[in-house]
Image 1 (spheres, rainbow, N blue to C red):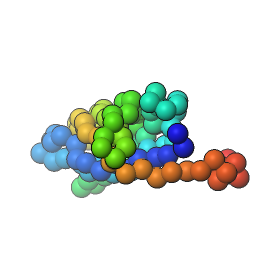
Image 2: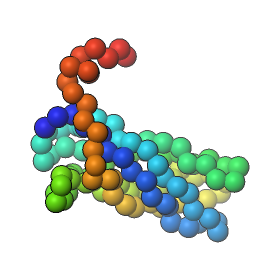
Image 3: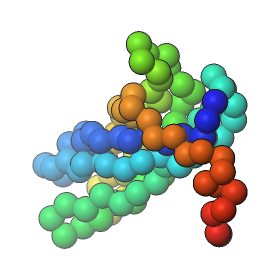
Image 4: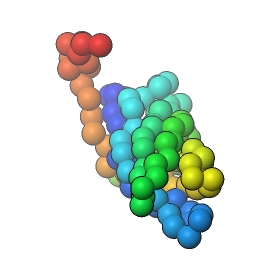
Length: 106
C-alpha cells in the first residue's frame, strides 16, 4: 500500500449553545495494509475561542472504492466547555509516493 492521507470535514456535537467545524487531513500511514492508522491534529475556532484536537484514527473500514477511518475524540477544554466529535474520514485519498518522501527535509 502506498503512503497516503485522508481528508476529513464534519461538525462537533453542540456544547455551550454552539458547535465547531473540524476540518483537516490525516498524517501519513502508521502500519501496513489493513493494519494501518493515521495521526491527525488541528485547531477549531468559533466566536473568539479556540479548541485544539488530536488523536489517531481507527483501523481502515473497507468501502466500495477503497477505505475510510473512524475519527472520534474531544476538543480540548476552552472557555469552560468541551465538544465531542465522532465521524469518518473521506474515502478519497491522496497518495504520497515514496520517492517524494526520500527528498523531504525535516
